[in-house]
Length: 176
Image (tube, rainbow, N blue to C red; front, side, top):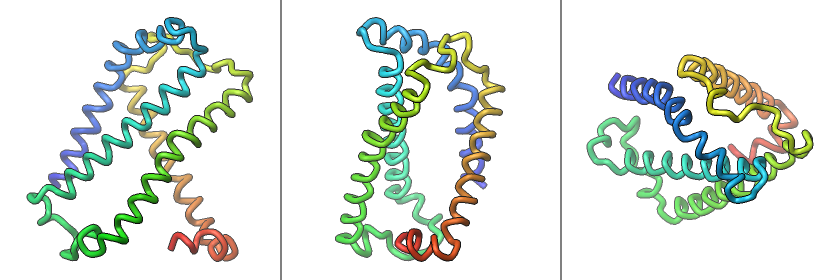
């Protein structure tokens, strides 16, 4: 119950504070492409890539703290040792592979997909970027909830397809 309460408080704080943060900082961000003589779409590719990397690092630091905070050990589901304690060499190899995949996806795949997506529209940004066009906290909350449900639905159905006969055998079985 403590975890759910804490997660709810963090989510509410994020939903309430994020729009205010962006309303204050967005004009500065959007002045940077002109200041440095860079096209807006290129700036946004770099900005979102760095923003993604920042949140990957923050999330991993939070989980590192949770896993290594001795006071939380009593809440583990099992009493089995952590993977880094039980099989340190295997865990190290897995971590190196995971970090390499994350870096590749964050610094190669993400910018490439963004650039290809923007090129399909002639590098004309199809949405407004003015600070007064940013959503208030209520609209932001509705958008977040919608995106969470949409992502969960897409993940669920994609995973079900991956468990279908031929796809499972040739593609997804490697994961299991």
